[in-house]
Image (cartoon, rainbow, N blue to C red; front, side):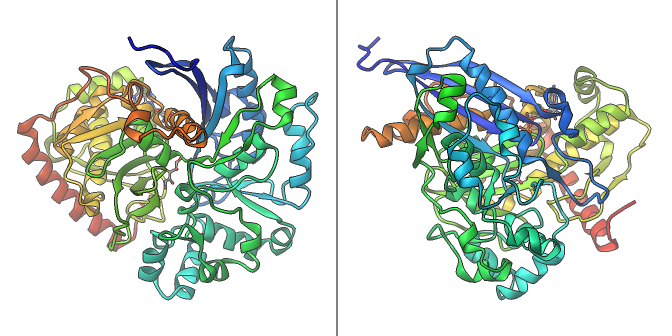
Length: 535
Ligand code: ADP
Ligand code: XUL
């Protein structure tokens, strides 16, 4: 044991995801670090008065996915009340950073700035925000309704290649720019009444600091609006999207910027100290940190509401096939990503269809052979992002749809094969995968991942890597602001580490089976997509 030179400090990470808001507090001193608090609030269960399902409001159009931003504010109030009541010595809370679902946008009118600065600590947060929204709902990453706007923006930007080269991605329906354009076209009066458009990340940071907070490049690069090389708004992308957009967007600052201190509202309401608030970022960026992945040549696979495959790139090698994205990484490098909409909710659909619980789901995976006797499923229960499938439709071959165990294997193998094939463009031939997200507690699912990728899969000490990553970003930025910078390799030490002995090894004999099945899936995918999806 070395000598403790500084008192142990606390860092709070928050993760505003699709279905929940999570808080993790870590305690850090010169010798040791530990998670000392973790709590999650489930939007459907804990805030039922908003009527969400899996965090999303019901909509007549299946392509639309919106959530109430005021629900996220109420969740923040509730979670911070719990942190304050936890018994932790919050006078040692040095900084807070956050992680949020990417791409979602929040629309505020001109009264918001002043109101956020003058909230009454004697009153709950949510009722005080009524009247501040120029649009009561926030489109989120599951929305696929802005296809026309994607085409318009692409055309105005001189084609998909140019847009991708400049911003890191071709136009995607869920990206904030196309969503803003759709709002401007459909609801011009409300657009005109909009003074500030936040992403979920900067909206939450604004609530914490009591004023409009900036965006970080990790999240701003999910808008089709930012120049990936300079981290500045692109004037022609702004113009292609909506009039006078530039003045409605927050400034972009580096991910490790301190963007304010905890507002007097939170000090008065829950007794929080005036701790530093660090720029919030997207959940995938934060997961990179929370899985200790800070080097190029490694992959993180997240099995959350969405399934994602992420890698770090030193240079932004944009995907020429148009499937993937390059975002800014919170380390200042670049993050390559592919996103699958049919993640956990697709696994749940199959689980529920056969009346199983997760244990029975795992047992079904154990009782069926790798390769499923050639049975395959394209699990597009909802419109899919990767590949671009605008109309839902589940497609199977050589599979008895009444066979529960085979269907369980088919959904998981279908997902893993899709993730494997569609992440090849990243050029990462990895031997190790860092796994995170709710489904990674399931080792049978991880075994399929290991076999399909032919790589060792590691489970992490803290399952919610996005939230842990936010807490670690708070530590990193706090040290930077104190003039005591910390290398990322030191930041992630001890917490963002694999559980000892947790590695799931690939079974060598299954490699050939999955190579064949991957080719069969690629062919099925081609056939179904050229025929138009939907069954
Ligand atoms: P988010 O992306 O919204 O943060 P999480 O990472 O918290 O989501 O993951 C939530 C999902 O984890 C649930 O929707 C559920 O399907 C999945 N999950 C929880 N436990 C298991 C399990 N034992 N096996 C497979 N999936 C699970
Ligand atoms: C990434 C994406 C999703 C959300 C989920 O591009 O859309 O992973 O960030 O929270």
